[in-house]
Image 1 (cartoon, one colour):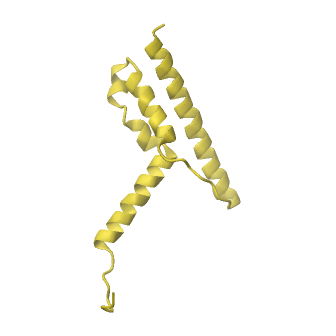
Image 2 (tube, rainbow, N blue to C red):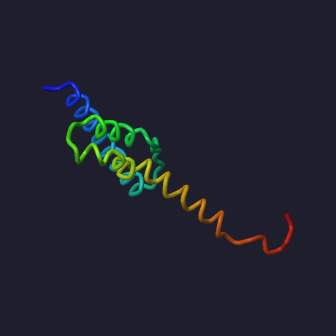
Image 3 (cartoon, rainbow, N blue to C red):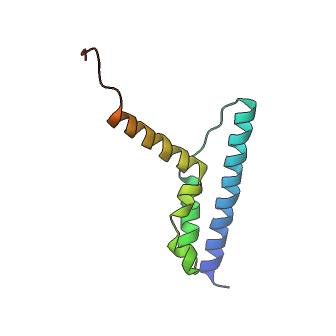
Length: 98
């Protein structure tokens, strides 16, 4: 077995387990109305590295996909895009005071 497959497999397994943990924690906190903190990019970075180290050509080309599947990264990306859109196309100062 190649060391590259072992590293890739370990990183992908960690990505999947952490992503499941994030998702279950977010669902649990939503149901019980409690707070839940996601660490952005940690899970996505592990998945990207796992996809990058693999010798499978399809997974190697899709190295960016774990960033979109990671709850923390996706939530941060959507929030940032919403903020930038609101900043660009938001309501202007109607009263004229600064």
